[in-house]
Length: 118
Image 1: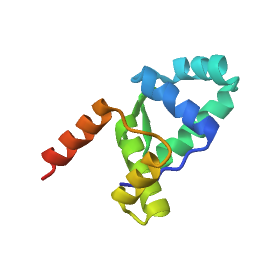
Image 2: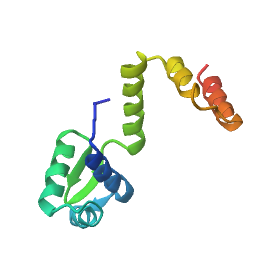
Image 3: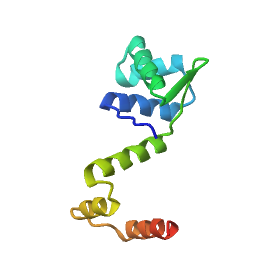
């Protein structure tokens, strides 16, 4: 998967697209103005960058994702674990649970994931 790192405002813009796709570029400009206070030129500049990076596309004035929100966050999570815990999911879980106790429901969900991947 390609690497996508987004700043806070870029992430908010991406969320607008994911929540409204497929969205006309004109409507995206209106949404960006309402939610982010952006001018038309800012919206198109950031959209063009996203399209160049392969995250979204703007075809026939309709904006849609090339990478789903789920794929984006899966890649971000994998990258975080790789960079912070040397790719070790057990080390990540140990660090996570050292400050927060898992509920029985969470434990059951994790066990199901483990069982499904055996």
